[in-house]
Amino acid sequence: MVNTFRALCAFGIGAVALAGAASAKDLVYGSWVAAKHGVNVAGLEPMFKEIEKDTKGAVKWQLLSGGQVVSARSTLANIRDRVVDAGLVIPVFTQKELAATNTIFDLQMAGTDEIAVTGASTEAVMLHCPGCLDEYKKHKVVFLAGYGVTPFRLMCASEITKAAELQGKKVRATGGPSHLFAAMKAITVNIPPNEGVEAMQRGAVDCSHGPHAWLKSYGFLDVVKHIVDYSFGFPRALGMFVMNRDAWNALTLDQKKIMLKHLPGASARSTIVGYIGEDEEAKKEGLAKGIKFHKGGKDFDEVMAKYRIEERKRVIDGSRTVGVKDPEKVATAFEKVLPKWERLAKEINNDVDKFAAALRTEIYDKLDAAKM
Image 1 (cartoon, rainbow, N blue to C red):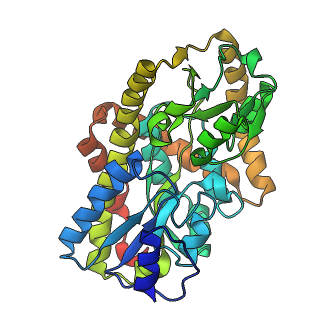
Image 2 (cartoon, rainbow, N blue to C red):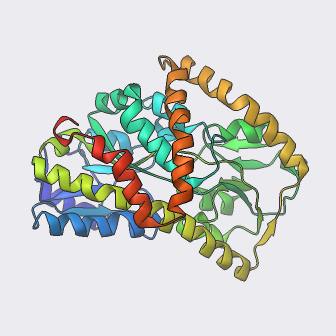
């Protein structure tokens, strides 16, 4: 039954609830992002080849991307129920289930360096946030790796150059930034990025909050005409590799160690190649296509300054409301290690190997594969 199900999924025929565990030789990673997304191409695909080689074929991963099996909101549940063995989990789409992790996700103005924020938030979740690990454990999954994104801009179908021009505009935004755009009297629309292009085509949204890389990875090149090229912060504590706990436990200790050996490289490539590098290429393609890039002015500075001051209290109050115990401690777990990672980021200087080495030294070498 397992093999039949996997084959059906591979041909995009659909998914059904799956009872029982797949063999370690036939593991499925379900991704709702496009096949050409940087996390898939730069991060996961090379890692899966390395794992298969190092395990001598004992552990093989099949990547089903483009929402063939899972959606942004259903991924956590589908990993829990073993519809897939692992997937990409973004806390904001499961705010109730991952409330503690979402506390870190929403601190989007804390830190401006992508490498530093990625390293700090991944370390915080994996080593310093018991509440984060507990909520993953509660849903029968294990958080094995994060990744980072670049600063989010404002990509629009029509010209927007000033904060006041957002009044009444429909902006695709999730998490904390929904409050930011609401402060500018925009109407926020909470949908995943892979639904943003169609929404913009239909006029359901006027703008989408996201990085330049999304012009290519989600196809916004086809609908965006203007971009406010201004940093509106960016999310963190993103789950690049969240795995079903039974599937993880079914691996031998040596196989688990091989997985942990290759995950730092996948995280580093996803962040530096899949986002930082892709940001530059996407902007070039956008300019060539005629997209107009507008610098944000003092009016955006004023809104952002006020939002930055209020963010931490709002995030903590919101987390407490949804039942997070001691959300200040969760926020501090991230904030405490951020300065260290900011120093490391300068040394890393967007070097994939150096970033992977730092992730290994600061996080993965401190994990006990037998106890995860």
